[in-house]
Image 1 (cartoon, helix red, strand yellow):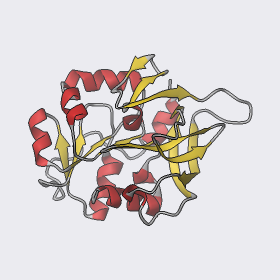
Image 2 (tube, one colour; image 1 turned 90 degrees about the vertical axis):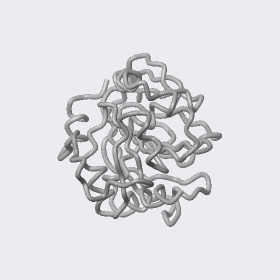
Image 3 (spheres, rainbow, N blue to C red; image 1 turned 180 degrees about the vertical axis):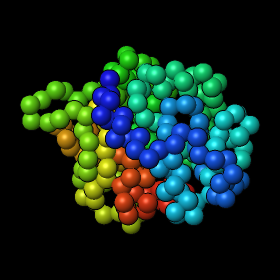
Image 4 (cartoon, rainbow, N blue to C red; image 1 turned 30 degrees about the vertical axis):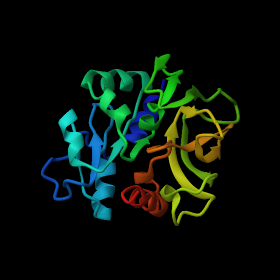
Length: 224
């Protein structure tokens, strides 16, 4: 389970209820899927800095307004999955043919199973979310900047050099599978920093907290 220090770090400055009156809301932009497990103020602030239109997806009808979607997430993967199930939006999410980006726990939800809460997830990627092994040489959670090595050409990483650093906060990681890994990194083991399958993408790091290259990635996603 994620430590309180990890949750505190990830929630700094975050407001789970950004105002719906944002001037950046708009049809055709990014739809942020709301399910009660993502404090998203830092994400919406980044989108506003970049001039990327966004809005909130609360119901199945809301999906029709947007061309791309983000699944945010912090905290416990099993609890996040329970909250997502309670919305009734899972069948619609799994049927989407528009670009979808999962961020942090939102990425983990795309996998088949998480050791956190022994939870079955969306199974859009047939890979698992595992916990870092305890080690005297590495702290868990993994918190801070880490080098990301790009393994496949994809518009998501356009104008981002391989070896760029991104900001991570997590105790669980996506097991490395070459078939689905878009980029990788190493902490106490190699794991997928980002994944890609058809129209579904996931990043374990927080692009909205990763400086210039994080903003480039969000801009790239808004154009896929």
